[in-house]
Image 1 (cartoon, helix red, strand yellow):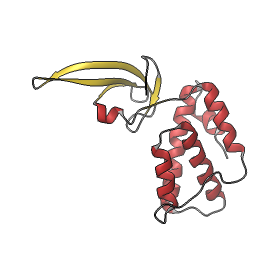
Image 2: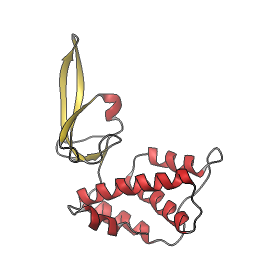
Image 3: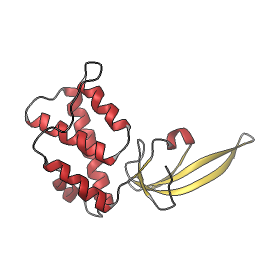
Image 4: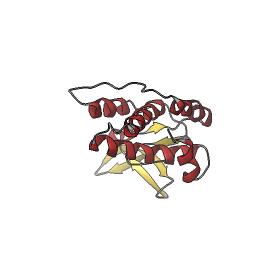
Length: 155
């Protein structure tokens, strides 16, 4: 993935932020490259080594957010399968791909399962964490508050 300085990003340790570039740091006589990301929630700059930076993804544009929000209007499940006997594993593997569309699709399907009271405890926790992540990302990208973003993602 190619990032430019100023791109909006998200990741495991950073809910929303901006990519600030890379910096060489000398530590114990060795030069190491760290990737700088401004965390907008905590208002700090993180210096991420390459292995942690691999989990960072570029946030979608406003147009992409709007287009993917249409997924939430569908009345039927998009894609629910079982891997190794578990829907939860299927959903978490889909999320590992790191796409905003995948995030929305998993949230949509879990929301419908939740409405039908067919959701497990682990899936309910996953639904809650995805909802929190989507609200933060949508509010950041769409430049609105989290209450407005929360209303946008209702299924």
